[in-house]
Image 1 (tube, rainbow, N blue to C red):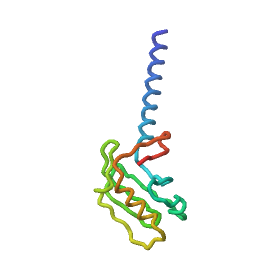
Image 2: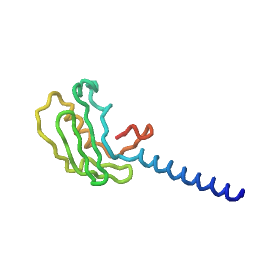
Image 3: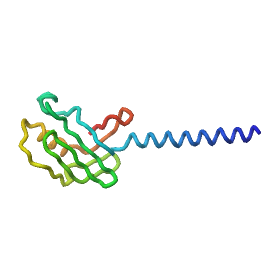
Length: 129
């Protein structure tokens, strides 16, 4: 009887361990929509660059596509990722060409070209490029 109880406990622990690993894997995925909350380089304050709308980026890992909004125009391209390495420069980006106020959209797109790696922190809540 003790052996059966012990076996059931080990099986339950194994199931709990499997579900914990799956949750961790989900939080390290690029998949989904991310909103910009900080950008390095420009001497203009973040809220001054993006007063009306913050840039977003959408990763569709299943189809290897990226897209989003640079605060003014929609953009789209091919997702080129290998481990934690990411390549926006060769992603064959296209975008709409609306007239935009300021230069936040230009700064955002030129910053994407300089990025070569990423990490996900804060339990999957923050994408660092």
